[in-house]
Image 1 (cartoon, rainbow, N blue to C red):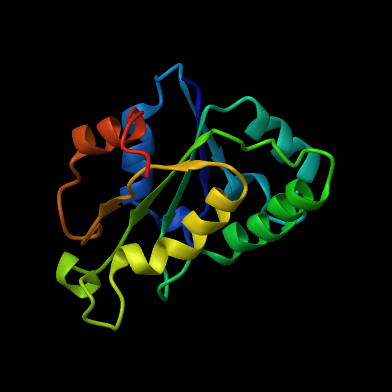
Image 2 (image 1 turned 30 degrees about the vertical axis):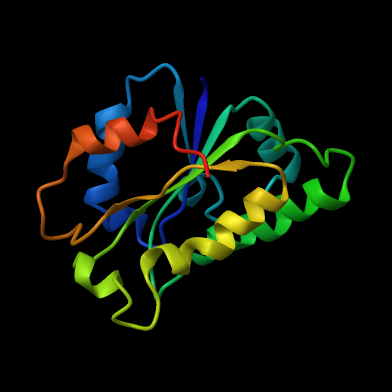
Length: 169
């Protein structure tokens, strides 16, 4: 199974957690890390290139730090441009039956995302999951790393989440 990790981070240069996570999977032949923060520093997203990457993936992972209860702006722009082109273009079934998962790092403790601020983490991520389900994907449970700045990262749990093939909802 070929896994495409679509990654965005507003402060990529300063990231410690996500860099460590990527380092732990860099030798995996089945995983391609597509770092939007490095590729599109100027912001002009190449929709055709992105669609070609999606076509070759069996599993798509959005990986990002959750900022202000949302994705980084670049990832939202990617969704607006690429997913709109899929829905209204000639490749309407490009994502059909592909697996989709979210991997997110969070600065806050797990208790901060149990409804304390009015919504659980799963509820905050629902709009993204609904979008991919609407386009034909099968959703996998999200993988979250809480207190990412303070805790020692569980790299094995991350590697297991990346290679996860079951658990579709």
